[in-house]
Image (cartoon, rainbow, N blue to C red):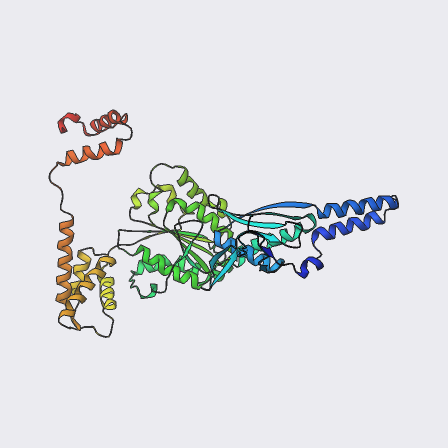
Length: 479
């Protein structure tokens, strides 16, 4: 026998005057006062209404939401509208009356249980129940079941309340989330982000101000007619600090009433933005951070790229407060229309450390009490600038210096120590860039072209002719 659960009968069922009852009462009074109706007609009407009210009616609702958020909010709505969840006597041979539940982590970090699956609705008709399930493909909470017709508006009220709770009191309110499985986000731990060193140039600090203004002073922006919706692209080589900037902004976001989403798969951007719209009203809005966006915005427009462009332009996110942060190591690969003004409000270029930022980076890296810097760092900073060292690699250089100083139990940071470490880094970079001289440049080019066109060999002749026309040479001269 299928396991059943019970929502306890409350005084609500006895006292409640819902919309269905009000409308039925109005009709009843109207008919009873109609002089054309005979006494027999009135009795027939009453008999029909009693039978109709006791008939079982099925219901079917769908809520677009993240799985655990939907389950929790429906549970809360049931408690608010109907009553608490209790176990009922189990008549199955196993005698197992446990309620199926899902473990939920709330926005304040506490955990709770929420009912899931089939739950009996005692008092709403014989064999009345509500069944809560989740469609992982459509990202929908599916709520089905049956109850007596006269109680259907109680179910309506439960689902209306659940919808409102999703919008205003989501379990992800003011949270930083990481999404790999779009249906079940994971909460990001940003407790250590303030300890990570970030040194920015004056131009980068200025470029970040439009984002920070929206995060830190959203109400002031709204009062001045500045839309909270915004897009920014952080571009630069690996190690320039793009992701670190985003996570620093994430900390500011959740501390000021925003939700933050870190999305690892750029192809899910459009769907995640649509999902986020459900809980957009839980705070000021949503910050969505996507790394390596060039993976889906390069070359000709395909369905995935078009979906992203449409979503950024408006469509499903019209009127939604969403700040979109993107990163790329290869801005040259991004399809130009993606960079259009209304989609991307600012392009923030990040590069290597210059003399000023190098000096600040070094001094802040050795700011602990056990270190002291007495030497002039001018020459060191010039070396950093000349070598085009980015923050991530500068951090490794400083770590190397600290490791060497431990052996002699030293506290004074010498300029020479930094110079030695920088030279070692430059040597390593040179070795890493050593070219493979076993084949000629022409052979390398031909091999690359073959790999590029291998999916469709029919393109070979056209490609070769194009190169011959461009170079004024026969391709045989290069074989």
